[in-house]
Image (cartoon, rainbow, N blue to C red; front, side, top):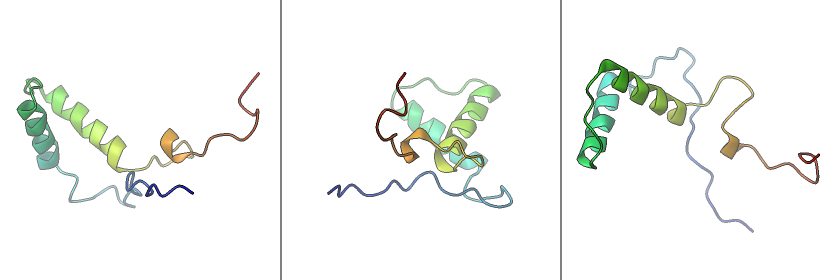
Length: 82
């Protein structure tokens, strides 16, 4: 029996793609934490966009059937072998 709790993330996407918690400030906070842990400081707007994209992919489910691989159950038997 597996007592591992189910992952909390990714969350369902908001219907309107407007979640006030997902903000510019959130991305800046993450950038600050990265810098405090020794990673380079953001130097370009593209850096912030990449952080926002990575966060969005972590926080919200994809809208198509290709959800994150960790959320899918492994195949049973030899379905994936040649």
